[in-house]
Length: 312
Ligand SMILES: [Zn+2]
Image 1: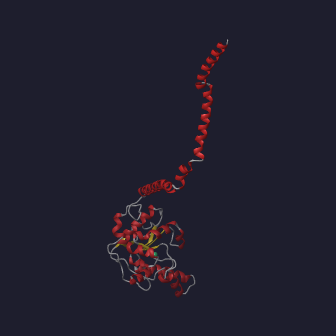
Image 2 (image 1 turned 180 degrees about the horizontal axis):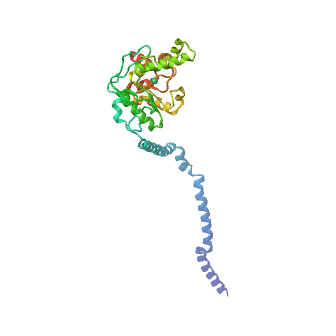
Image 3 (image 1 turned 120 degrees about the vertical axis):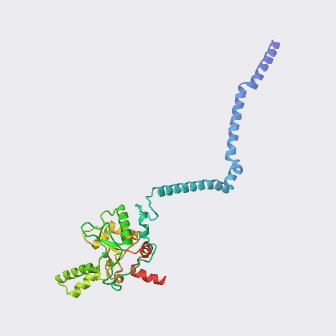
């Protein structure tokens, strides 16, 4: 029996040893190893990465900035590209006829609006510079835009053609019912207007002197009117020329754009003492684009501009 026990012990030992090497005990070891591995695996992230992972972050600021910069540049590039695209699209959709932004093709009128002889129409007519009783231009042309209830009106060739362009563009810009009510006036017709008004004022109770003084504020004395040069035009959309025209879209458009067609608004507000006339938002004077543009930009009246030219 002892021998049997010994054999049994040996058998048990023989059986248990292999089981210990590849049995349940192995499971425990694996679990412990895994736990250790997990702990070990966590540690480097919490404690040891300082020199590894933090170093690049702290000392690597420039690196980081370098990484960011290209992105920022890319964004800027994108913005620039977008802006360029937007500008291109805008330029493509702009209804341009020429560099002045006309909506109507007025190229046939260019030679009139911007005359080769820039100074040819730089004429000054006012009470101090009368045009004379016998002055009559020899190149008067009928206007195409005279108001239907008025007799045919005329202007000098270059002024007439430029006005045609002015009104075509004005109508394309919403000034639908602006028409010409007066243009060239002979000495006689000016005298008729002037005398008629003076008589009317006298009938209202004024002395002749008072009536003439009042009339001269609004209407030129015969021989002193710009209308006699064939270079001046009255246009508006009212039944008669009235100051309230200034508040209309049409008056503002005409005043802002007149220079493009070679015209200036002749009697400006604030310049009454120089021009001797009250503000007339309907009275335009042809002068040619070169000088008209300068006069408009400088905000001068013609009298001031001519004085300025002497100093240039
Ligand atoms: Zn006028």
